[in-house]
Image: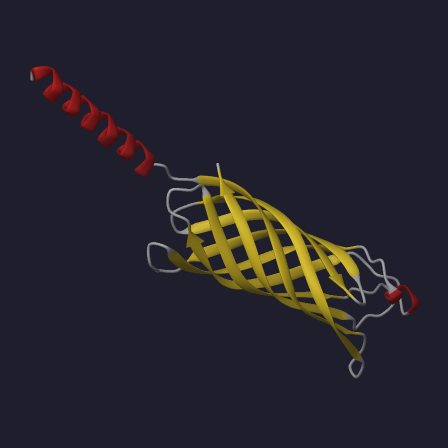
Length: 182
């Protein structure tokens, strides 16, 4: 009988110790993939703009801390007018939420580059700085190392065309991100 008592006590001690070790982790490193659908507007001058449907596909790598999250992101942005890439660094602030659903707000800055489209007939596409804002929610999947983010995103890039000084690209989309926690 003493053997069973000691076994239960040992197992309980190991489980409590392991739980405390995991609860003390400060950072969760992750990698993930994104997909989005929305629209794109290209403003060529004060009176001329074009609007198109757009898609985005990407990959992220980052670190998730208790209150904030930081990530590096690559996106392929595809519309009927332009096809371009975006390399960006993003920062998110987690808002108070439930155990399974956590809202967040974020900002990012990066480089928008390249174009493979009809835009070449208007002007030469230039690599330029881009800014983005995100608002979304994270869904935690219990007992699995995955998190799902659902977010709305808006990206603006001024002076996207080398020959046109008042050219601006604006892309907005609804996006889903699947993150694998290491």
